[in-house]
Length: 299
Length: 244
Image (cartoon, rainbow over all chains, first blue to last red; front, top):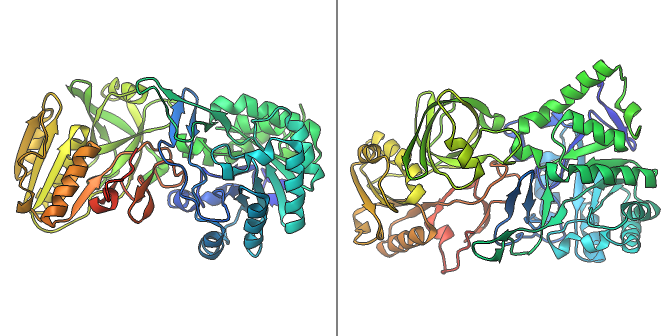
């Protein structure tokens, strides 16, 4: 396929991957769409034990985005491996399994218990801002990011992609630490830590105080951080943050991403996302480009 | 079909109360009573569509009644006849088909989905009574009066006052949570089943994003997909229900 890209030793039919936490396990969208039009899906973030998620309000809109405070509600790795994975494993797309944790040991045990599932890429979530179990503490310091990456590297043979937080000082340094720890790829950015206050009640909107901002509002920040990361590491990058259309996908590729994830835009206009592969193909024809790999990191 | 999103034309739009709007849209989709659509009549902002429940439907059209509460509903309220908007849906489970004599208790904007529900039950030949509370003024009085066997429309006060729930086999309720809680409690004491339709902030509308998760007696449920209609006892239990 014209829009296909090589990512590690995998071939994605196009660079569009559904972002973790926005697409469940793909089953809801599959009721309405041909989800195999996507290059891949990063499934809802899993933790060792099932989690009920955060209490209180979980979503709040901003002028060009939304904050969420879902708090990693998920069925846990065992239920995923025994009940969900068998139902979804045969899809013709790249499967990304996203794992979060609160301690090094909970990460490693979760990853071990998923190891018999024949999925394509492990996305190590060290960047969820909404819960202590989200591991953001691991992702905001180079040393701890390297330590957890190395430990995971020694635990599994799966392709290892580390998902980074934008809530850091020097993203290049963190990405380099993950590369040194044995990561095969980097994905970024997770949501930007944010907040809302209800002036009427004089209360903070979210029970968890802070929430994660996503959507077009964070796209320029994401693009900048993908660019900085691309300059810092040699391993491939999956870029994300507020992407809604083909032109924005191209921007992320030009900044140095080999593929992208799209999330919040599924809530706005899912039709538009499923049209992106065809739009990319049209753009390539117009520009006389044979492979999208020609434009990766050209700026 | 479904989330594909269909473009609809505004067939009519009227303000029927203070900032309460009655919108009729042409669509090939057919909802069930108690279901909702995500409505969108703008490009970028607001980011999310607005979940609005169905007031009425017939061949080729769906009617909504909503209150202007923010930017999204403000834009929807300013639509003119023949303007286009996006409809995603119908979503959600809707009210169940049940037998017997049914009481529908509503309050505020919760009255809207009970109109469609009463009409559908009446069309099935069931005895159905509507008891609705309005904050200041009754809107769409004629429509509500025609929808049920007996319609009682009340302004101010508590819609549950003097309610003889024992006359019924099942009760459906939609409205402010304290009102629904009171109705569920009355139904429990009378030994009849109750169903409640709840409201939560939503994003995807189809059960993928988990921002509308609702805590129930039997664990987390997705308001948009497993609901918005739940058994009353699933939501209002042990005095510590959590709908935010």
